[in-house]
Length: 274
Image 1 (cartoon, rainbow, N blue to C red):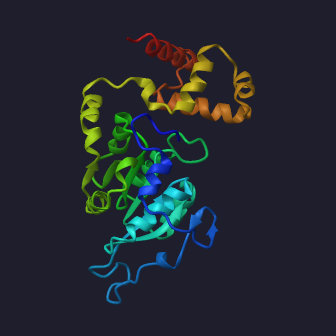
Image 2: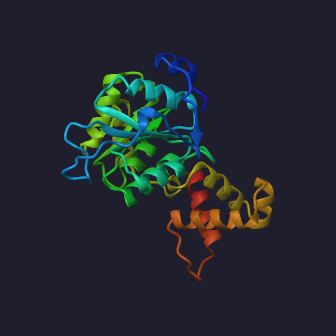
Image 3: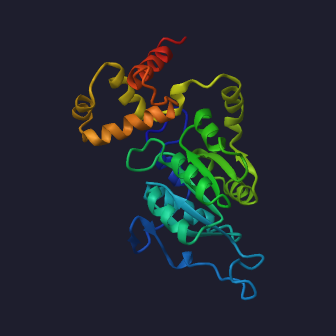
């Protein structure tokens, strides 16, 4: 991700995190170490951790340096324990299914498309593991992304800009607040979020950048085969994308009007909006 003007670049940011050496090994996208062993359970109630045990945190970011920097920074806070590090969302979701943490800290843009995989993973966590708190990290403020984080409810959700993660007190406070069921949104985003919620939501805002690119080609009258050749993917993959676009736009399978025509009209309407 390219740093925006006026914001610290990734290297500058990582310099603040006092990075150390890489741990010895990694398995299936999940990075582990001796410091990330499972918590010791209360012998009187083996399903929960004893009172006073650290909050268990998982970190998800495609950058090794960000993962390592966050881990070393959080190691300075004895009330937190990093129990898993991942470079993509699916490995994290599989681990959470077997051993849920208290909070997951994850980047918005993750492999494979580097668009909104982090936001989609947060939605999955809300549906499957509602007790797991989520702190979303972003290189830049986006009221739309923050609104998606809060769409299903604000309890146990946080949104933090990456240029603030070097502030240990702020980072720890955010994680602890989210673990307690609070909502923690970066102050720089609050005004934009209020404006975002005050105005009507445009239909295309539900689409990812990739889906908007595909819809633009659909609106140009291309067939699924032509779209597949244009993007260098299979026709089946295009069909899946197009059907998901219809679903996100709320276009029902109505025989009275082609769904492709309906989607094209929505695309053109937003394109002509002031």
